[in-house]
Image (cartoon, rainbow, N blue to C red; front, side, top):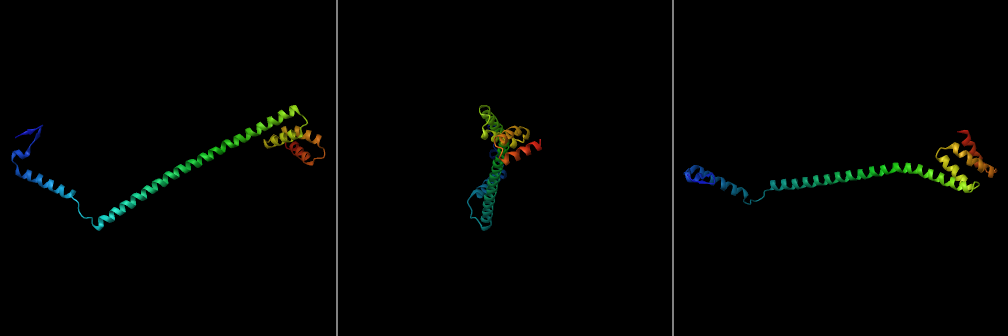
Length: 156
């Protein structure tokens, strides 16, 4: 009995059946790894496997593309909300601008009309009455100013 790093050498024991079994096992593994002709059934399986992999890859790419495109569209919808807020802030800025002009020139008809329009857009009908009254006083012939003033006074 001989030991090589703690491994028992069975061939040295003289057990011929086990040695022959090991030789047969080695021969069978060598036969399995040797090249053999591919038959028609194996070729069909290979083609089917290839088509399946390509289909899976295509569907995965399509899914990823759909995910990113839906993410981009949701970002686009989220950008719409600040636009509504900025519309209100834009109207507020226009109102302050017209008020600044009217402090310097109280009879400026363009600023009066702009202020009245901005306040009506902001649903501030009470605030629109003063500039509309000045416009009617400056332009008594304009029926549209009178009509707007009547609407603003009627729906306080």
